[in-house]
Length: 331
Image 1 (cartoon, rainbow, N blue to C red):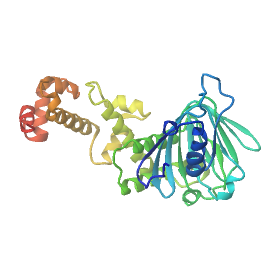
Image 2: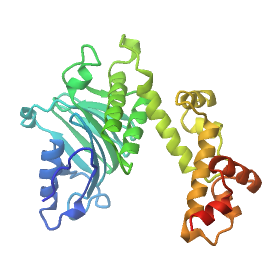
Image 3: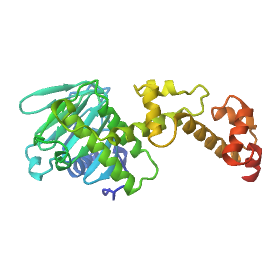
Image 4: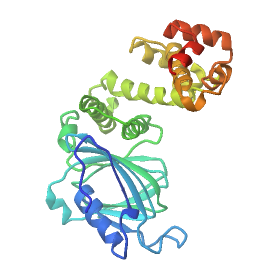
């Protein structure tokens, strides 16, 4: 029997962990009712190519963020998640920021709200509702207790259900940051506490934007997640010699000056971060026994340098030795 993890560990759960005809029932009980407190079912209206003969095909990653807050990312076949009237008696009034990239629809006793693929919604567990993931595929949510947001949003209603504007950058920023945290190898309690505070501030801003008289967001609430995602995307492209400030700025819908300001607040700059990341990558490759037969020129090119002389000079300035000496020192 699977058990819920102790924070801040990440838990991975898949329908492959279950066998036999009761697989869907086991998922409904553990993931649906025990962890997420919803009724989880296959969507009967799915086409035969979308559904599986064994019921629900499902894989999820859960990251406890502390303070009864969690991040969840899921891949599944078409499904229904129902917060039933009976379940409301458990007292769970958490709000969750949710997105389903294949789209779906929210049903309440009074209305149905289509959710286009990639659009975000904020939903309360204190409200009877159902979400039908019509096509299956990827979805994600950040769940936060109502009380944590009520301290940040004056007059927060008890059970909101809101579709967020499709052009609003904050939901994707919050979800991308949570996804980055879930993919990190090690997470300390202070990092999670800081991340949770930033995520709660972002969600609070979505519930009560400045135009409605709310307090403006703390700068760190957006700046820290945004810079973390920028660094991630730089590192993913660090081997490309054409990597530049303008390219990264366009990717994040910012101006080059806005990106520079984010680095300046950390006491560095874009070019220094890129240079240090490239040099660290090169040193790791030089120390790798599996790459001992590769020439220094090849390693320089694979680290994003287009001039081996400039690479050698920068390497010596950074580490106090030549690339060849670093390779020899590594044995």
